[in-house]
Image (cartoon, rainbow, N blue to C red):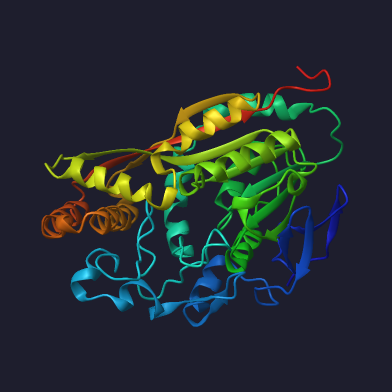
Amino acid sequence: MTGPHTTTNGISSIPAQSGPRQVRALRGAEAEPVPDAGREEARTPAAAAGAQAAESTADLSGQVVAGGGESGAAHGSERDAEFGGAVGGEETGVVAGAGPVGSRGERATVRLRDSEPEEPPRYAPEWLRLREGADAAARAEELLDALRLRLANPPGRTGALTVHDLGCGTGSMGRWLAPRLDGSQHWVLHDRDPYLLHFAAVGSPRSAADGSGVTVETRRGDVARLTPDALAGASLVTASALLDVLTREEVVTLADACAGAGCPALLTLSVAGRVELTPADPLDAEIAEAFNAHQRRAGLLGPDAVTAACEAFAERGAAVRVHPSPWRLGPEESALTEQWLRGWVGAAVEQRPELRDRAERYLRDRLAACAAGELRVVVQHSDLLALPRPTGGAS
């Protein structure tokens, strides 16, 4: 059952323990109510996942991405299914840098940009849940002291911290960060998928590090076209695993929006393009090179994203700090490692089809080692903190 709406800083919000009663569509500075995309009764992520195979949803361009067997592996041959349904078909189940989204029973999500109908679906809730523990362990807590200092006494702020989480997915960034910051908080969750927004709102944390309350609202819109008006009153902008799926122009747009709003940005888990597997295999480097090329397709930044973001924020006067945030996957993370391997190798073969025969052998061997508890993987990521130039006499 959903709880009553509350108001924080003049913003209609939803208590963190409840599901969203509405999602909002971003139109520049305006947020217009649209019908709730979730069910009327709030569901836990686990309960919602049980019903997801029968559900589908439309993106803002009106195109439907169906659940179950309608995508990815269901369209591929058994041979293609070795790579998660991602290799050799016109329709791909690969999420570059993540894992396959096309396994039977999973529901692919809608697209990042409403202007590009050919952009493939990116993430499934199952994949986001699978990686959440590794993400939480990897994020660079070393950046939080400087962030806490900046957020402690920002000029002109009254009331709760207002945190905008871009491309929030199922809300893992909020679950990690909100309990690490003091003071009451209001989280504004941005995503193009109302289904994921429902997951994120239901699973939001209820209290900050000092026990203060946390509230949440959802906004459905194109995070690649963020404006300063959309961030009016923001105390902080966050995102996880977002930068590397943006273009250079979109990163500049993000930096412009944060600079215009005068707020810090904490952007975590951008792929760095470096992977270390133990034991090593002669094909490791070739797969990694092909994967990185796949990441850069269609003008996306991939492993160049952090460098581009550092430049963009620095050019706008921000002090930028970068810290490594690697996944360290061992036997305890075998389920995640398996899915990551399928996506990593599948993207490489999609980029370089001539690798297929050798990659099939490689993937079989790697999956066998993973199942036997003999494989360890380090996937390098980077976290970025951009602190705008202090204004109003703040130090």
